[in-house]
Image (cartoon, rainbow, N blue to C red; front, side):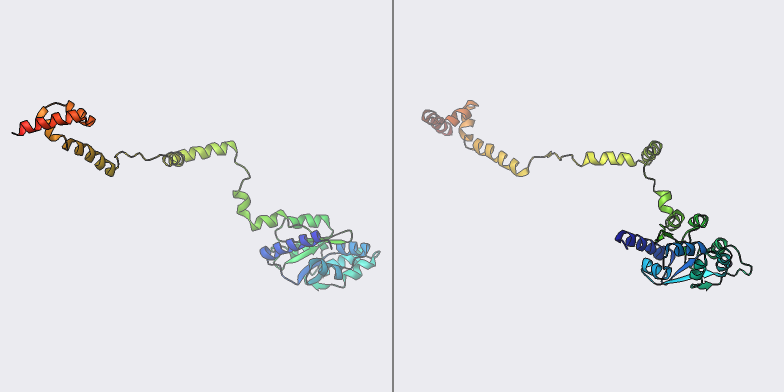
Length: 261
Ligand SMILES: [Zn+2]
């Protein structure tokens, strides 16, 4: 068996295992059409189905199906021989009904007995696809093939996902969203936040340490010439003092001396 084929069937079986409680041995409900195909293609169902499903399988049929096949199978006796190998499940039909209807009644209660239906009957397959949790098996030439779980099978498992997750938002929906956001004040918040973040804090007050130093320095300078300043009553002294010319220094000293006397 090819790897992709093997992976596919395992994936599908896992889906039925997880979501619909299918367990080994798998109950494969086989009808006349499937046996006709098996006979025609010379497929040994008994060997091939467990191999394909990679597990134990109970191959089953019903009395209705056997009786129906007996009627048709006078020409193809081989199909009937194949069918009669399988276990007969009690379908409860006292008067035999057509095989496809018999199968439909057996899986009517949500397929609670976990049948995998093996049939080549297209009409029956179509009906089974509309129900959730009914695996369909058929022969594709010589190869048994488990069909991908039908849409109802997926929908029943995850009804909310498809209903609540649109693939895209239409323009009208987008407009509605914007309006709702405005009404709730959501959008304003979003706009304000990024504005606040990049704002840089301004230092309104200068560093108190740097202030102290500045005040001390001018005070120190003022102290020194305090004496001579008071004497001369001239603001220019300060400037001249900075020059520190010898001549001026002497002048100041003299002035101080005369004043103190
Ligand atoms: Zn029946």
